[in-house]
Amino acid sequence: MSSVFTKIINGELPARFVYRDEKCVAFLSIEPLRYGHTLVVPVEEVDKWTDLDPETWAHLNAIALEIGGAINTAFDTPRTGYIIAGFDVPHTHIHLFPAEKMEDYDFAKAFDADATDPAAMDEAAARIRQHLGTDEEGKRN
Image (tube, rainbow, N blue to C red; front, side):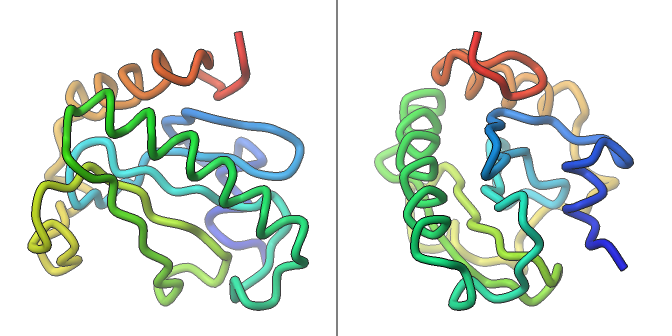
């Protein structure tokens, strides 16, 4: 059975994409720690990041660096948080989010999916895409 991320990648479920290539995608989390919280996900459905092949792992991290820089600039924060948790969805994903202090890393403080402001989510995605030079599908302009 496909993971929820595979369904998002395949267009079966909606998402706010900020990046897409043949190996990975990046889209906003529906339960963000802060607006701009982005997930970097391999197209290939692999549960544990430790099971990824080294080439895919390196690619995910190269894209995470680029998106992390865009988040840092777009939200003018001193850090971009980076976490690999992997318990909610059995499909490798890297969490990237604007961070100002260690308390920003607390998943217990994440927005509930129904509590996010759709306009704020759209704006966050647009700000990240602007710095990446990508369109609404996450593809380079």
